[in-house]
Image: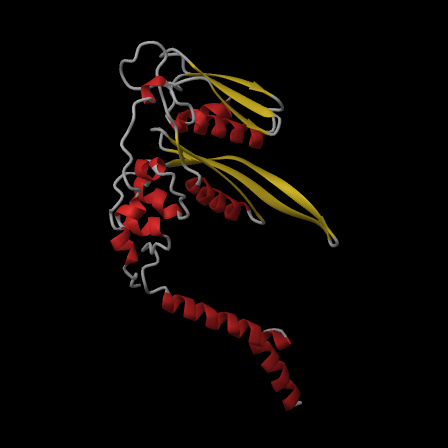
Length: 263
């Protein structure tokens, strides 16, 4: 009897028979994680050449990155330049399903837009099994897709730019969005979702014209983002003057980049 009691006691302490070992391993991993967590996890350690240049202050403005079309692979680069100005908003969360042998697997797709209301806009889409994970991933994707938005005038070129410089179009699936310059004071003539995106981009006055199935919010947001991104695709007369080509940051700071990074 005593042997039986001790056996039951052993199972009780371990937690339901043979599951004790698994739980013990979990606790061990947790302790190890906390020990490593003594270091400051918020310190950014860049892993790309562009990240190293940004952290060392070799690139002063985000416009230099856009000027040379350098690909941004780290979200921290955008945080470095626009941390205090960026505002993000979840535009839509939708469930998506996949048929598997065990039934249906539901995941969540999040669309997140972010901007600084001063000529920068980003859009991220992420699918995950949990809503919070999808939103976090979409915010990171939106930071990596931040693009400059060119703004201009309708009529008189006085004061700050307030509208899009010319008519621009963006298309995603069946949805086509056209942005048309508007006089100062017109406001944003668009749907509620479109107004949010245009405001984040820093556009104050604009007419919009859409075709296609605009009720599909995901495609509508993407088409509007592509239209805003296209504002720098058109070469208007004020951009005709020749600019001297300077070496890109990788060439300019090649000596710094050739040094071995010490962690």
